[in-house]
Length: 131
Image 1 (cartoon, rainbow, N blue to C red):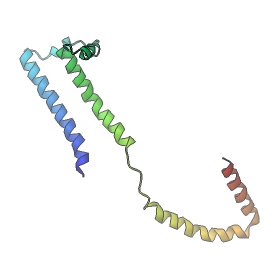
Image 2: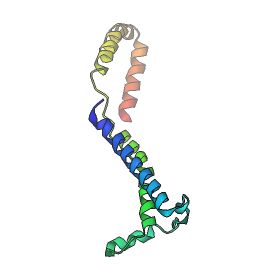
Image 3: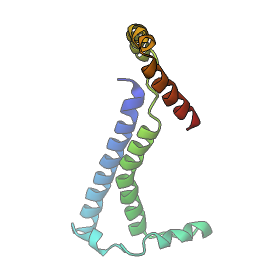
Image 4: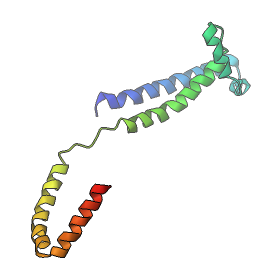
């Protein structure tokens, strides 16, 4: 598998490892495992407006932004992967097209033998051209 497939997974694993390590370190420093319950879960995004004025941002808001980005990153990566999926190569379609042409050759003799079928096919092609 090429490197381009491993790099996003590696970066995601590094991000989650860093997040868990920082969480454990903060738990040790705070002396409490439930410090994250005291974070401002309702207004954390509003506090990032202080960045425009180079103001201070509370550490809790940075934690919540990091957590939100860590949760949204895999979803965004999977959406971009499906949007940037390469088109199917044309080479596998060529043998089936040749096979269809070979099957069509005997059918053309049947169509020529039945004029009513030929008229119906002509009308079908004309109606498809109008669409």
